[in-house]
Image (cartoon, rainbow, N blue to C red):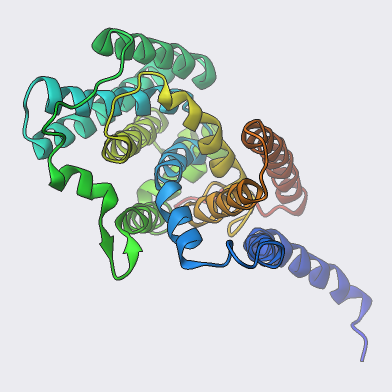
Length: 339
């Protein structure tokens, strides 16, 4: 039985949608299979899975933070610098000032959200492009990081850090690393906000067509500030987790996480909900990166393979995101609707 000519375009669109929506999860499964066949003794093991879930928790939370402004058509280049500042501030408050670790974590996360909101104010009310504005504020955060640490590492004394604080990263629950549950909680919350609440729908409309969003009565400036505040909140959380992981304050470590975060956010916008940033897509993208990096690492790749892999994946992600957006415009699927 053959389909009629009039039904073929519909079938082609359905096939294209499924390839776009589920191609990246299929790639993650394929990569895991390939590396498992190539490294049967080391890759398909509980230790490898546990290592991936644990080591990629910070990049995953940071990528989810980058996803929020991307949904509103903005970019927050300060997240890497903010991560570095947050993690040294937590350790400085605990080690140097003797603060209780829960209070130090709470203050740092709240401060990061405030910094994110300030980014939004500068972008929206200062009318500065988000790339330029957040690059400038990020550079200022890097300067503050250097001032706090005096360019040196923050190292705990002989008594070390509180066990409950380091347990934020080191603990396990139901056989899995505790950081994996943080990622699931953040991703689930972000999915709920973006997909089920008016805030998320407003951000998508703003990201699709800010002028149209203003015409239909959405306060675009306010919701863009909310998006940057959400980004700040999440890079603050990632900074706390990084501090519990590394247990020393490195003033330059945050920059290493900037590129993987944007790769995850942009590549994630090409899957699950192709053409728009979404939490589940970001998690899938981070999984692809994690599996790829773990595999090439076990194959004995040199140190330069990681930035090469991240950079190449970023180019692919941007290209696929642009192609997906153009395709949605051609098919009319990207027309914004009033929430």
